[in-house]
Image (cartoon, rainbow, N blue to C red; front, side, top):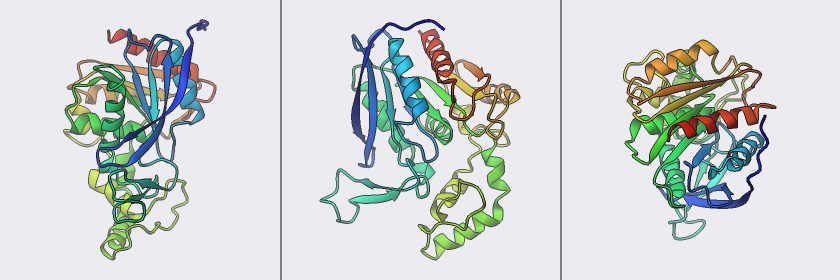
Amino acid sequence: MRRMTETYREKLVYTESEDGYLLEGAQFTPDGGGRAKLPVVWIHGFSGRFYEQHTVAIGRRLAERGHLFVTGNNRGHHLGTNLVNLRSAGFGTPGSSMLAGAWWEEFEESPSDYAAWVGFAVAQGFPRVVLAGHSLGALKVIYYGGTRSDDRLAGIVSASGPVRLGQRMRESADRIATAEKMVAEGRGTELLPSDGTPMSTSAQTLVSRAKVGMDLYGIDTANAPVSRIRCPLLFILGSEEPGIGVRDDLAILRRNARSASRTDELYVEGANHIYTGCELAVADGVGDWVASLG
């Protein structure tokens, strides 16, 4: 593995979602500002946060390679959080905060956060950015790219998104019915009974996902969001995350991204879902791909 000699600076940054909520993040800036290369915006997954170890390692590596790297929270960070609305009259007034985090977020609101971080990176002096999402964040970035026409996107990276979440949703019809009943009764913010997995959420969150359908990769759905993305797409999977996807799934994802100007894949041997010990391999794979975009 080649030695990197470029230096960079790190700082905490903040932006505001399209609907006014404060989002925290970090920026890794190479000496010289990284003007000669495309910047990368990286967004976390279910219950994640901008400062996760694998994200920071990937960000530092890309900054060493000369890329401005921005990592930011979306409204699904941690299990639960109160998001502060910067446009409200004051804390404690109606609309001044929102119960969010992984247990309470509503998936269809996620583009408001992604657009904010794209805008943040563009404001640093870059007309186009590469937008990456990890895990559930990968599904959100596919949803964003497939439901919005954003000419600021030079490329999209889907990093370890759960390929068959839509199928699992359909297999949870009884649980979804329970959630819909709770929402109808005004109990949408209550947590559902545990299903034995760490992915349990509030009723409103599950109803939101059911509304979207979550088959964003088009495994069983025609005209899924992935099929409507026009910019270049990179799909990443690790060999040690079979519950997320397997190597053969990469060909399916590329086939389903039929409107993309190009599709590529990165399969990382030995990588688990958070890329433990393989962070630099992921970063270099992303960096090489971004460089190929011109």
